[in-house]
Length: 252
Ligand SMILES: C[S@@+](CC[C@H](N)C(=O)[O-])C[C@H]1O[C@@H](n2cnc3c(N)ncnc32)[C@H](O)[C@@H]1O
Image 1 (cartoon, protein in one colour):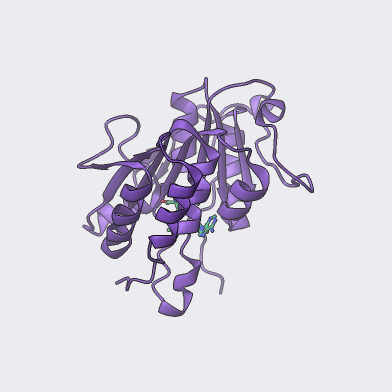
Image 2 (image 1 turned 120 degrees about the vertical axis):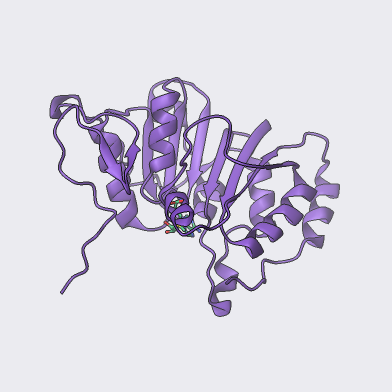
């Protein structure tokens, strides 16, 4: 028998609020004639993507990498209609649910893509184009044989530095202490880094599905924000990146 899929978007009536583990998913369901089309199913063969053409307007750009069911991007898009939002995940199934939720809420300033984070940044993003990058609960890959799949490695930090605009920010959180220790020790060398104690002061209390689950399990959530430094020269930055360790810690 197939296990029920708890990430699936249920059928809701216009005006209804949708809940996940008792926590509202931001935005109201609109009548079908007001739904948006937020999926990007086919990418051009070569990048970069011109997001002002995609959205039909120039605006600040927010990227959610590993967005899962899209809770953060839905909340941010509801709160910041003046921003353009892009959310990606390597798993097509979760992108389908996130897309459906954004469509039903008429969030035409969001786009969802099933793509790997490295590919989106490396192949489809212009240098210094993103204002914010959000990474909530990056996949920890507890199996040591899969440690090389951990997304936040030195090369990925360099890529984010290249693709963030000057002063652009990265927001990251995890409930895995070992990943957190690695994130703090590496991010603080590349970016202006600030650990955030307690909840984020801006925006929704629960940023993501994993955060809700982790809090229900009584796990500590570690949060931090990084800002792009404009004082690096290419050579110094390359040396710094080369000296950082790979993410080869044990996750429990
Ligand atoms: C632990 S889940 C967290 C999902 C969501 N951010 C949350 O907090 O609920 C990690 C997500 O990252 C995705 N993921 C893992 N590696 C990725 C990569 N290299 N690029 C994009 N998404 C990735 C997984 O498919 C998964 O949906």
